Image (cartoon, rainbow, N blue to C red; front, top):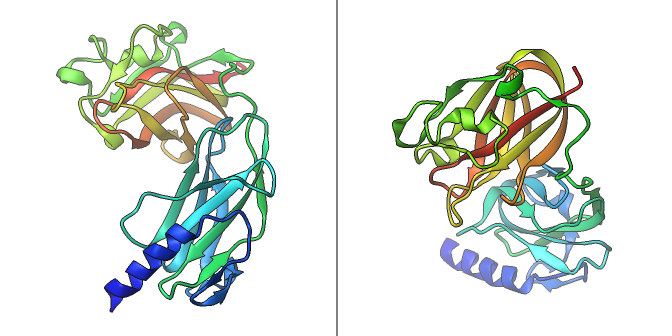
Length: 274
């Protein structure tokens, strides 16, 4: 019986490619999202960058979810998570957005009874380009006294100063890089600055091997207590900057999501106005 219900649900998901039109489903007309049985938390927008954002919704009962989005309330694009069945924790990344642009979105959910629930029209605005360096000094550099005090691993078991050692992430040279040894989502690196600074932006340039080793999201733990992010990396073409505001001396960078393999970084920066 449960298998039949979810087969019906999967079919309904295929039909539900909408831009705001009222649909008639097995359960009748679309109902407000906040009336979804079991309750909801969200939707919220997290990890906004210049070219990406993540829509987050938690549902009390398993459901399929999708987001219709675009620069106007006519939307025009749709995205949902790759999943084998209904779930309660929905994190849908919207890639390929334009910097400094307001986007409209509407989130739809289908529960186990094949009833459709939908949010109102919501908006968020992407950041201005994160490829331009912010004003300030990169204090996460060996040239100004920063050093690596911990790392998940270095490729081939080498030291921090080896060919793919962690120090290459803070040496200011785009021709060198730190690579972990197949750590994937478990890769991390911790940097100690010369002293405590007020950090106003974090810069990160992920390494990539094409189909693997590319970091898509990361977080920063400042002085072991303050969590910043997670931040979305839309590509591996260069360094991306993310505004923050924290007093810290130690910064630990944790991979949150990646394509697996020898993840690491070409360059990591912390911008301050000393």
